[in-house]
Length: 123
Image (tube, rainbow, N blue to C red; front, side, top):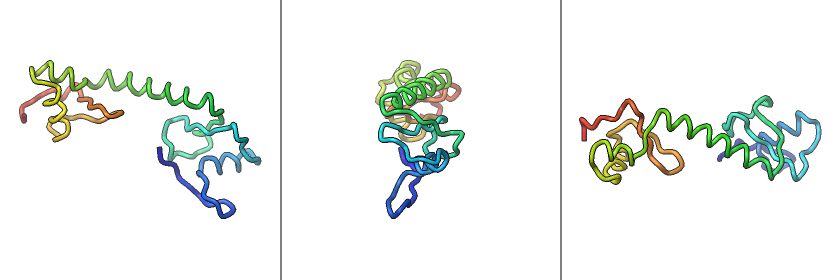
């Protein structure tokens, strides 16, 4: 994930850490980390920042991924399912995605096809 960076005392630091330290009026401890609540690493509003620790921080990201994937699975189908629907191999379905033949998005290296766009009239 990319973060905004700023200069502080001649050093480059992430903007979200800088803003949180300024808000708290103290330096962050080495075991403290900052989590972007809405998952957008560029949204550095204080209300979107939360102090966590290095051990707990990955758990928040796991939960965000689970929420995102549950939404994806209600709105999208996998290339495996698309291939099954049209009686083609999964590689053909992935090729349709790469060539923009179907309404899809790539998430974590896998293609997902919008459920209401399961047509192959252009293939």
